[in-house]
Image (tube, rainbow, N blue to C red; front, side):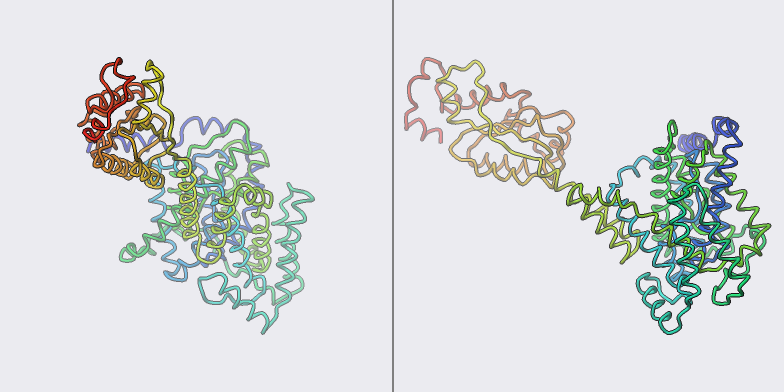
Length: 576
């Protein structure tokens, strides 16, 4: 136990901030402060919008951006990552809110945070890199569609219909709009989205999202447009930390949603950190430390009424583009949002919901990278299939099932592709130092096969062909090119050897790798070969062993002088 606790302590120490982080924050504080201010301006409407979309309200989005944003900035594994509420997480949270209520979401966030810390201690960060690109692109496309559809009720100015399926809610919202149209809300949403999309092309560095939201709020207040429903009252400050939401009895039923939230938080955060690394020179995130920081952020955010958080790709990209060089920028972004919560809550509460819907509609559109989708679709049919299935599943089911489905399909197709690489080829016997006459006689009674590629559960069927070998006395299996063997492949190999032995055909092997001997030994295949003395290190040794076997069986003459005389039919019948 002492050793275990010692290892945990050492692991925790490695995950905590160090002097290097402080030194980097002192390098160019002015540039980081300016970058943090810019990110805060961009993040404010997104935090409000995602809080509303999650079902817990704008105040929950702000609390998440402040608390989770600060903790992830300090303890995370990336110098440039900006964390907070995201659209992908909102997609997962909506059905949890519908089934378990706001307290269920807070409990799920707390449990997911603990799971993320555990993943960091287990050094699981490295495994996230194995998620295939088509799965990532597919669920990103699906998320963008879901985020856009989630904004339809607010963009149309109708009350949000009941339901946890975005397609059903969207249809009901459209029906409500046809009965009582609210063109003011539609105009606000479309205007804000258009300003953001056009402005991003015209002046990419200008935060058009906050400018459009301010303009929409001013117009709604000055013109007295009651149809432009505002966010509503917001608390002037963060609530005191509390665990009053925690229902221990409900923890069991929330394990699956919590695991889904933790998986999504890990995946999206590490993906965002990788994107930040690719946009800079000399920056490289620590995957395990990033999981640790996100875990602490998600443990703390629910205590203040916040929703689960992840690294945010859009805000992280803004942070990088505006010149951030250390985690001071992300920390500044959280501090500025905290000031807004305490000082400007009455002003923020007047923002029209339709304007926030426009912000998120534009965000959804900008999430779709047409070039990446086109390249992925053109790569291979398998990549295109995985992308489409993941996107459709995200839209029709939910994000977690979509990722699982995408990974299963990707794994199946990958196994299929690998299995096709496995081959069983008949190869000519090496002549060695045998004479031409002797070699020809050996070739009449010995056949050699070379196995290439993996010998595992999806690629072993060709071994069944061995049992059909006829008119030979010895089969030599050259296994030096076998890349991997699993238990299924070893069992099928053993079965093929036994069937051939029952027919009086000896099976010799050569070139078995040391790393593959354990698997063959575990199913008895290696012992079967050893018992008859039919395992050899090299192919020439196996051919000589086959020759000795044929001599002992009387199939070929023992002395070279007898090689020119034909084998009598009587001898053949005796040996057979």
